[in-house]
Amino acid sequence: MLKLEQATVAQTPRSNAGRLRATTAETRVCSVFASFDLRHPIADAAVLRGALYSSLRPNLRDLSRATIVPPGGGGFWGAACGEQLLQLAPSHRARARVQRERRALRTPSSATVRIRVRVRTRSCPGTVAHPASISPARDRGGTRTSTVGRMCSHPALTSGLVCAGRRSSESARRDAAYSYPEHPPRTPPPLTCALLRPHLDLDSGAVYARPSDGDCVHSSAAPSGDARVYGKVNALFHLGGKYLKQVQKACYLGIWFETGTKFIWREQYKIKARKATTAANVILGLDRFVGTLPAWDMRTLYMARVDLYLTAGCEVCLDMDMKSLKRLEKVQHYFLRRMLGVGSRCLTAVLFSETGVWPIKYRRVYLALKNLCHLLSLKDWDRPAWNALQESISLARAGNISWVTDLRIVMSRLYAPVDLDIIDNLEVATVEAAMKAVEKSMEAWIDNELATSSRTKDLLTGRLQKDKDTGKFVKKSLDFRHYLRVKTADHRRALTRIVLSSHSLAVERRQWTERGKSIVPREWRLCRFCQESVEDPAHAMFMCNHPELMQVCEQFLKALYEEVPEFRGHFTNVMTFFQAVLARREVTPVLAKLAFNVLKIYDAAPMFLVEPPAEEP
Image (cartoon, rainbow, N blue to C red; front, side, top):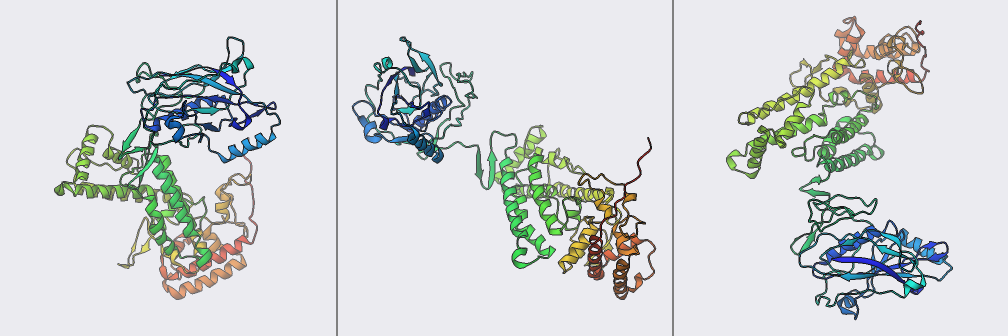
């Protein structure tokens, strides 16, 4: 057992001062010498040095270097280490600051405190090497010295340390002494010097402590003679003659794991979201080199380069943590909004109903069920994956945590909850039925969002689209809409903003609380030209009597009637007429041009601002 007792002080020349600290125009240096039994690997000594430094650092702020002191008579320590420097805090800024302080010093006075060390070995392996912090004390002569008031044990090696400390008197310098082991080991350690951090995160299964007050913390899980001061002690594992490093985050087969948190795949979501964001920004930045990309090409690049990061590991990492899932959803929503050219206030459901892209929440569940079908098909092959699945199903039936249990929880959180029956034998047909139920749940969520929103319920609810295969008009909850294939980019964006209610008309803008303006009721969002009706897309494109608007509308109707003659005089409701025109693929370019001209005219005129009358008290 190592015990650090009261220290005495001795003068050393300035060249051997080591780390200097400038306080009140004097230099204070203290040397801490220690010798240990070299019976165990040097890695234990590295832990000991770091722990000793962590304990001394709160009081000795300028500690940055330590000198290895060989035992008396040289020995193998002198041959192996000599007077090399052990960098306990290898920081360029710290060393530069020390050099500036040394140049700024004008007084050559310095002192070195040597702590007396006694070594007592024991056969049983120890577990702790954590001395406490140095505290000032008074020796018998009333001299102020530095003492170490704790003791520590470790079956390891070692060396000496040079630390910043306190200055002492002449009477204490006469008592400087230190001791070494009588018989140093004959075999040199495999390592000599190592770089250490200013503080170590020591892990072991025994105790949790913080160096706030410097007290020792005893653990009931450890032997009674063991004590720990700062953190926990790392257990040493070696494989193939090399020591394994203990980390909190690691990647295995492309999946990141993290310990110390409730959700072990949190780092997986962070890394994949960051990579997906990088890929999305690269795709969105291509317009600077090749011009504006068509929406279909951007969707293809999204599925090839972004979706693979958003769905990486979804067969294993189920979305149990909603905060981590939102990281992926944020990237997906950002890309789709930029692809469509709409703002952040746009309804989220239309990002999927217009592009045909699945929400990442539903897509990850669907792929996990698809992987479950694959695992169930391995029954006849007797694969380890199938055996692991049977164990997971058994745990789920017993009400314990397992992969199948998490999958059922994730499916129960969908808009229309889906149940995966595991009471009977789980078959491929059962999982395929659950996959179809997940798809229907997604469609039900999109239809509900479009039907309940005041911005989309009039135009997008119950709309029909012509099927390319059958030629019939059918209802599709999500699909890549044909108006996104308009070749002129400005016309395509204008029509998309009109359809998705992300435009600059008063019916949309006056419901924003921007620049201190309150929300105006819909009936008071009047047209800026006629000031008679609500300024919505249908009124602006087909009903307003402004001369410029009437001119562009007549041009549109002329082209429409030439392409589809049956539309002449067939509709009495303007919104029904708008839906019918939007459903026809052949007249979409003409409709997109009309939307572009109408928004251009409205943007050139200031908005008509009218405040509703105040309510009577």
